[in-house]
Length: 304
Image (cartoon, rainbow, N blue to C red):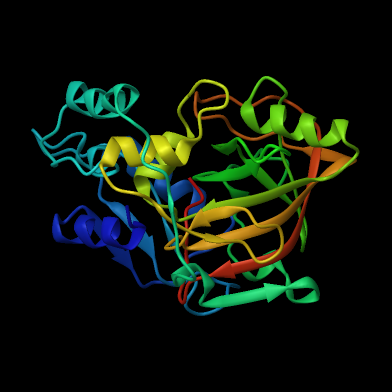
């Protein structure tokens, strides 16, 4: 339920390598984690990235497998608070267990580590973070891969967290998919029908259990926050965003907040897909306007 605790535990297990030597955002930050995934090596925590403000860090391969026998799925199991010896069956049982339990609603708190630094309006400049080119043939640099979007239905009855990529468009705008068959697209459609931009936030460095649930195909109108609580047995601590009253994890690393445009679109991609292929060209997707950014001291980004 805390990303920093997740990193501390990886360090204790010797499943983390801290890299002080400066690396390039283009393309080392994409290539090294890919090699780590293939070799089942410890997760790399990059402490110094050329061209990025001091203190900004990057974790690669947060869900990679381990080469140690009997601990192959330990990094993934840790997302759910399970021991490093857990097997896929145990991980699935933990995930499924919440479906038969009562939701535990998130707990709203006044503030949290994600509010240690706040940029508003003209202060917002996403290029001050690491925004890497992950693959040589990508059509742009991707800010958010291992994070999730947060939206809420206009009537306030449905809060949804969903994993979807987002590409840097300019210093305060992202572009990415909000497909109508996915929950983010459904809620975006509700706001569009009222002629209003969709209030939106993006969470990076979230509680690992929350990130995992955001990537699951939960039924329509089931809020991920309550499912995380049912699965872990404790409420997710959340705070209100600065500009649009959405609820986001209080201990997250980085929060972007703003709106999904009613009608503005731009080219996004192509991007190298996790299956191992890339389309030849990108496609037009909605623009996400970033009106504020909040983040922890020495924030950690997770590009992939």
